[in-house]
Image (tube, rainbow, N blue to C red; front, side, top):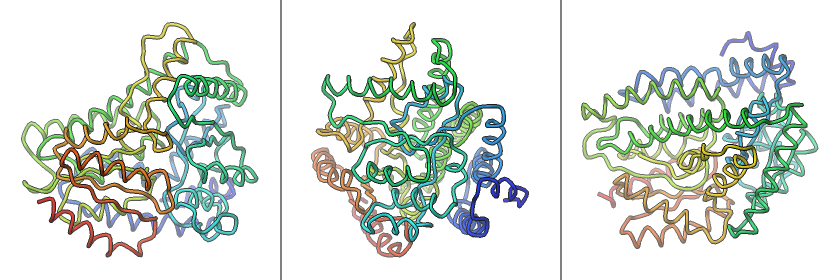
Length: 424
């Protein structure tokens, strides 16, 4: 990445030396995992460029928008309704939470046995390494787990944090709670941006974000082809970048990539040799640059054809209804859509079990790898129920718990290779 961004990073108070080291490591890591692939799509060149400039040109775009009076809202979770932010003239971006860099700083204020994602976002802040965090006018947290709840209390000492309460069940009273939270968030966003949300602006935002979901749904549909026309690594990267890139530009570019994929499907061209074991990933989200497990799987004789995760179908499966005519109607539609998210924070969570089994069957996979970050209690504990549901459907599952370090790569590779062999 060009050093021409140094002045911008310095203005954002980044640790320039440590940040340069991060970008160097990230570039090498990306080259080893992504650029080494054979038969990649031409359309992936755009994603390669976006990733190469994820801390550069994209941050410059955000700074230019701020200079015009726009507000930047940062989030860590798919529960935060982006429609509200866009309708108020703001820009919503995902925040850095996918690398162990900064963990030493994070452990000065957090227990060591905290999940890697939480340690990562706290570490990025304390180490002054994430230009997205430093660009934000508001950071939105949520109560999807106890670790996050308490971490946001610490994080608020360093950045402006607003926390949304996520219900833990899905009864009528829980929907009312969630609607009150969406309305409270709407008020906060209007206060932050200085703009009132109108019927027209919310309608436009709903349609724009549904278009982004539709193009990702199309991607998932094309991946279901046998043989699959795109690697799991590349598909994961597309989903990850959807949280950072401009939504209109992203939708256009991924639409073009899907056109290319469609040609591959028509010609029967696959990204892996015929007979390659098809697997599905399920569980915790994988924020940039958490590519370890997909790389291990795809270098162990298998191909990932779907992700049941927040960086996957959990974020794209459901659209917001576009039938609403009034502001109240549209708020209700947003409330209903986000209540359908099947995060492991809910109890009971039979929706997720049903969705995993259905997805595995539709994708014709030979097995499911359930991924949980170490110390992520909701997903690690729900793995028991997931395996039970998959076993009933005669689909084998491998449960993996890991973090962002590379120390266990060989151990994980041995387990994955054995699972792949067993599913054959």
